[in-house]
Length: 95
Image (tube, rainbow, N blue to C red; front, side):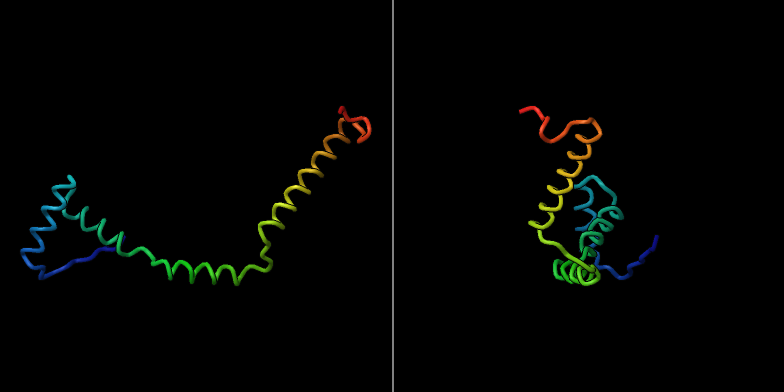
């Protein structure tokens, strides 16, 4: 893991951060680490940009409707195979 050393922090800022850390019941180091983690998260625009990059790498994107149709067809095919393996013909199925 990386380390950061920050010098020349105003005493008032240092005391406020230390007080906030104490309020949360954590060390100053843990409190500041949390602040850094929160502020280092990618922005919404960065996430959307990355999503667009990933989407561009995808060869074929299907719509939700097409996905539902494929799932329904797959389930029907599995049911047909299951019925076939059990020896149940389509016209012998119970009503």
